[in-house]
Image 1 (tube, rainbow, N blue to C red):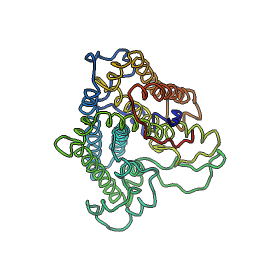
Image 2: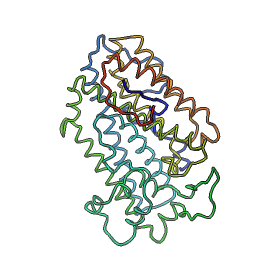
Image 3: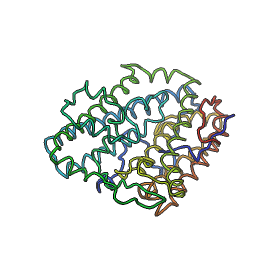
Image 4: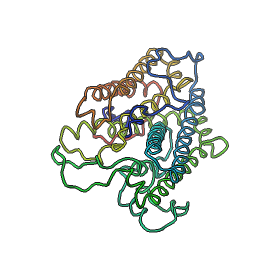
Length: 383
């Protein structure tokens, strides 16, 4: 049996309005972690019923929510092209955070090729973005399709929307002075080349929306019907779901939490080491990721893997529910961007990591065995 380390598992991993509102849950999201008792599922939930419910009540709404958030952002960037103002920029930043959090909840969907979508490449390449901004090319669909992921996607939008002036490089834990940094985003978007920059911002948002729709269509019953294949996949689908949970959880937690602790400990932190640093939304993404993995396990308000587990071992199902709720609640208590919290208030970050470790132990030693899951996930943390 391969070894897994939840210390590098579960969870990934701005304007004042963004910081106050955070990632707003879409309608399909689960209730707050404080909800003590989930609705009672029907007796003797089968594996097939659990997979069908997750496909219908979690996977499809999660993809739809991301598409909707991306489309809303694209529509707002279209308005911003001709009506740029600081207030509209604040709204765009909030909508970007919503889209980023909605994307974070999709990571648990089996067979979703998220790295190949040009949606989630980190870090973005400023030289690639600025290269696309130079010259006189028209930002039509053909031009945007030939651009690489380094110049498009969620983090390219973040680069365009948020100030990069705080992306200060460090050496041995101390800021390195004298390195030129770009002006604030508003000055660039409203400056001499502002109209072209706003046009590119809109084109990137439109491309993001188009790709989101392509993925959603591939899963819809009326499209590629990947959801139907998942729902009818039996043990194979359950294996894929649990392995996806484990693999993406390791990456997400390492990038979102433990890496920040380690970088601060060894004083090697650099701006490109922290996802969503310029927007200050890394802690909100952690919550979204945790909420997403929990929903793909427990089905949100409906039937999930936990209910199938309950037919096999009621006590273990209760244990897992408590682990998930505790971990989500602790993630929600991280008070600020993770890269800042590990400097000034590390306790909530460490508490979340510790809770994830307990959840990992229960998952890999009890749940995987009870569900008969075949592990194909290969841990990259060396443990």
